[in-house]
Each structure stands twice: as structure tokens, then as C-alpha cells.
Image 1 (cartoon, rainbow, N blue to C red):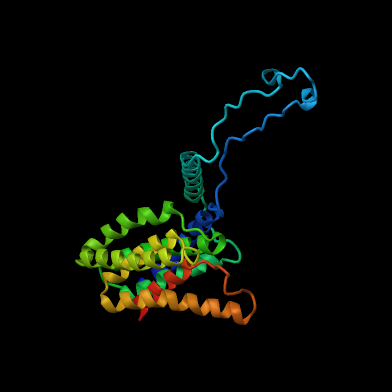
Image 2 (cartoon, rainbow, N blue to C red; image 1 turned 60 degrees about the vertical axis):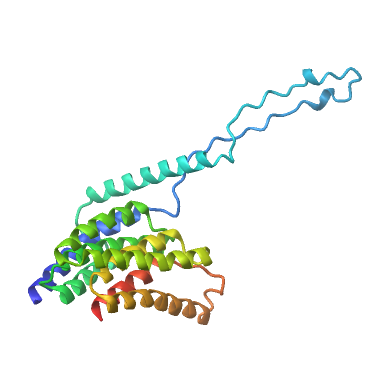
Length: 265
């Protein structure tokens, strides 16, 4: 047991280097180029002329794309997100596995991997949770810094975790758990879209898959724990006067902490 935990901590420490580099590649929102609409200048010097001919006014014809076209913003944003993710993963792949100083992210990743190994050593679920520990640390850092949960990490994690859950024999339970918890967060998002984002809904689906494969009790701990920890943080912000009732903060790290609490219960 001790050998497995120590090995997981060491691998987590090295993985933390790549987590730090990958997380640093995602910003609050990638910039994208939007065509500028140049308003033509009208020559008003001839407006007082008695022989006014509107057709001769110096007003060039307006032939520019509409800026309110939804397909323009959607396409450009998707392109910018793809470029951002490609560059972030590229830098992570080329990173030298040497921890930074202070190695907070590296130590956090090592701790998450060690705790998961301590709880799930010699079980088929260890692979899925080890992957989730590394990916979860990356998502937690990104969300805490930017209040974003990139699809480039969350969406590929669905098939990866599903594949890693196959040896456990509880894939169906995991899929049902993911669907249920994502549904709960989807309702919360629909009721209060300003309190959480769709990224939180997608992350909740991943947490539900992992904990649902462990059983009903871990799923409940995860579902309640994320909201409870988030509420505690909100109360702390109010008490310390660092926030108000309208303040927004990243919920992703608390969803992930709820999942970790579920596996450690």
C-alpha cells in the first residue's frame, strides 16, 4: 500500500508540472478577430446648397457584414478556442518536468493522486480516478484563475473516463450517475444562469460518472458536498467582506473537492 501511494505521489508531482503549464495556456477568454464596421463620413458641406442633389453627396455605399450575425461570433469564437487549446496542449507536451517554485500546483496534484491511490489501491477504479485527479487539478486551477472550464479538457474526459470505468464493471451505474448529476446542475443553471455556467454542468457530469460507479452514497456525498463547500466559501466571503450576495466565484474547484470527499468518505 505504501509503495503504491508513494509512487502515485511521485507521478502526481511530475504530472503537476504539465498541469501548471497546461493551465497557464488558458485565459479568461481568447481574443478573436471581428470585422470592424467603418461608418462612412457624410460630407455636409453641400447641405445648405439650394441645388441639393442627394445622389451627389459624398456617402460611399455601405457593404459590410452585419456584426450582429450570430454565426459570425460563434464561428470566430470556436476558432479562437481551438487555437488556444492547441497552443496550450502544445506547450504542455514540450514542457520539461521540473517543478516551479513555489510548487503549489505540483504538490496539489501529488496530494490528489496520493489520496486517490490510498483509497483505491488494488481496485479497478484506480485508473479512472488517477486520470480524474490530474485532469481535475488542471480544471480547478483554470477555473480558479479564469472562471472557465474549457471544453478542450472536459469533453474528451467523458469517453476517457467511460473507457477506464469498463474494468470496474460499473460503467452503466457511472453513466447514470453522470447523467443524473449533470441534470441536477442543468436545472440549477436554468433557474439561476448567473450563479453557474454550462462548464459547471459538464464538470458535474464527470463527477457524477466517477462517484456513481462507486455507489449511491458516494454520489450523494459528491452532489451535496460540492454545493455545501461552495456555500461555505460564499459565507466566508461575506464574513470577511470580500464579497456580496451578488459576487460570483468559480464553482468548479468545489465540485471537484466534493468528488474527492466522496471517494475518501
